[in-house]
Amino acid sequence: MKRILTIFSVIFALMLIVACGNKPATGEQVKDGKTFTDSTNSKKSVAVVYSTGGKGDKSFNDATFRGLQKAQKELGISFKEYEPKDPATEAKNALTQFAETGEFDLIIAVGYTMKDSLVAVAKAFPDQKFAIIDETVTGLPNVASILFKEHEGSFLVGALAGMMDKTGTIGFVGANESELINRFYAGYAQGARYVKPSIKVLPVYIGGSNSFNDQASAKAKTETLIQQGADVIYHAAGASGLGVFQAVKEKNVYGIGVDSNQDSLYPGTILTSMMKYVDNAVFDVIKTTAEGKFEAKVQTFGIKENGVGTTDFGFTKDKIGEENIKRLEQIKQDIKDGKIVVKSSI
Image (cartoon, rainbow, N blue to C red; front, side, top):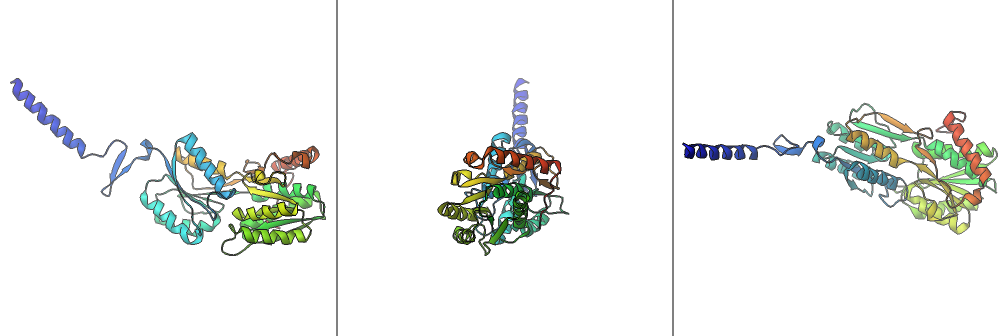
């Protein structure tokens, strides 16, 4: 009798092994014949398609990368990246390839030039969550839009430029004449005229198919501004801004950085940088997605939301002076309190 029970026990155990071998592992599900990991029991994963210039631009893309690194460190996420040479032609394919895998909890498109591509891919993959930076997408339940009030941060650096100007003329170098870049110029001009109503604010634009990564053109156009008397020059041109800084350094005038802290590139020459805290916004949208709280809404970050600001003047405090810094802090507070209203266009 014991021998019979033993045989039955062995047979039963073999049946269990076979049955378990045909089931997906814990945390996995089978759909359409394919096994995939249940995101509630796995490490969260994010994909990003960068804007023109990619990582190393010391600006917009690098700020995005810092947000990813922070999420990796604090939230334990993993991420994959794609750096297109031309987002207008490569973005759709890159976004599609990421979406097709089905492995990402969130796919981030960096920059307004990707809007059309993102919309097309988001419609094709309605169950995939997306976020786009610097552009508004409405009507799609799987896309979050992240915007910034660049004009408010630019007002601050424009006010500083007005305080530091000696010639009565300052300059602005934009990548192109898009609505986004014009927000930078509008705030900069308003800030400068707030402290010095008679000041001239001269804008130039790089243009072309590579406007965010054309240092040679940026340098040449900056030199024309300096020839016209501009002694403080602010750029909103991504990696092209490195050419702006070369020119201001050589001609011994001041520059102002953008998006990331660029002050250390040319210490003492770059007065400050208009900080656009893309890293914080990227971290926030990853965090809410990881927590299952993703919302397909438009989020706008200004001074009040700590989305834009200036650096702490680590290399230029003595040049700017305590009085000017205090005045700038008051201007910042007045914008936050609504006493100063900055227009997004002029």
